[in-house]
Image 1 (tube, rainbow, N blue to C red):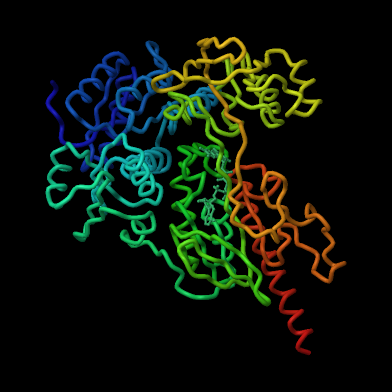
Image 2: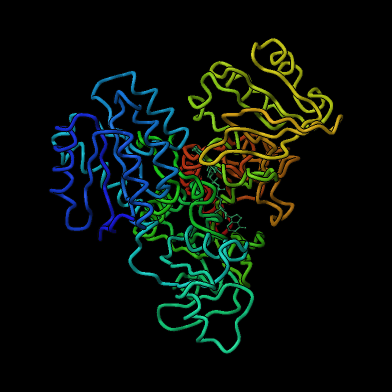
Length: 564
Ligand SMILES: Cc1cc2nc3c(=O)[nH]c(=O)nc-3n(C[C@H](O)[C@H](O)[C@H](O)COP(=O)(O)OP(=O)(O)OC[C@H]3O[C@@H](n4cnc5c(N)ncnc54)[C@H](O)[C@@H]3O)c2cc1C
């Protein structure tokens, strides 16, 4: 056993010893008060050292590895280091201006092995080195060294209920610590109770103990606002994902009193994404949680009010305005409402799949992951047009693309032109009456077990990626019939509305993002025809605000006309 070292480690690997020395020196100059820097010049020795550090219980915060090593490529080293220290942030060091590295970085990022990259030379270090390392370190610290726990949870790690509590706190950025019931800390905390419940118990920093609770109770206990402060607002935004956050930033910054209602966690689906790589301005990507935190803080600083764990459960027109009913009881009045409630992707249930989401298993088309599939065998579950389009697109890169279809024909669910195109595209094949029975892989997807319903036979196939495209369900079942939706429940707006010319009925012509209920707008994934991307959700959230102003001006004009 190696003697444990006190501080978390920065691990630097490069076969060039002078580069290791210089990089280690530059890192120590800035970070040595809190971290220890270890350098290695042999990939094999470095892997052994990482193993030894794990054995000794030593935390590794960062692994930085040079790509062009003779014995092992840097990206390969980072992939292997990931299985030894999965929590360490992984940075690839590449030569400045070497364009071949673009593909290496893109591939590594798509697979999740590379999280950041640095260039060699990295000086001036204040410009090239420290910002990247600082960002990686902030992400590591947030997850693995929070320092202070507002809540200590005692429960069973594998229990779903305990996962839900942790996930809720994590996604809402609440610092917490988790202890298994059997651990010394967990047992010590539980001893304080007369009766120990089956569900996880929450011990708050101020001494309160929650043994039986709802999500809203937890939110209130950690100081989140769970009720609106006022009875009326200019604008109520329903949903705190990218579209809702963007509407909040623009609404509040343009002088509208703005309330955001969020039923689960700020960030929506984007908040669950480990790395969003196609959002403008973040070349190395940004974690969805961090993007959401930044947007939340921005909206809050501009004056938007947030109510968490208390979503909207009803909406109605009332006089000139609107009333939004809250799921936790009560109502709030609004002059305009932006619906940004997003969707949930339908989940595929098969052993092994859940743990590989983001590392080979993707929900939705995830076209930004195309580099991942270069010369690889990939699979798509789904039989709709989006699955067909994705298959044709990926065929440009992949060795083979296989569409897995439960039914006995593609033609029932996919447009004819796409079926023809699939038949004509080399490398794309279709397996009918087939489903995924299991997924295999340790730190990334490597194989799938496919079950043929017709023969009952299972077959294991090697697979680099699986795209699950079995549809998304919009969060709109709580809305009144006055808000028109398409046959799948997505909200229709503007020109897509049936009987769009409301002028004929004396109603104003709907604005582009306005729904069939005057003053109610839709933005983001919940909007019919949305492209279901972070950037488009953000775009629609912001675009809704000028239309809210137009609606309010229109309304004021009507009121003046009625009075005068
Ligand atoms: C795992 C994953 C990875 C992704 N990666 C990428 C990526 O890399 N790049 C990219 O462009 N896109 C990505 N996407 C898609 C992207 O996240 C979505 O397009 C985007 O989040 C849509 O934003 P939205 O605000 O419209 O909806 P959502 O993000 O779905 O947010 C809707 C919010 O509304 C809340 N809500 C729902 N009903 C109510 C109610 N009644 N009252 C109050 N609140 C309510 C929900 O809790 C949720 O927080 C990814 C999606 C997933 C699931």
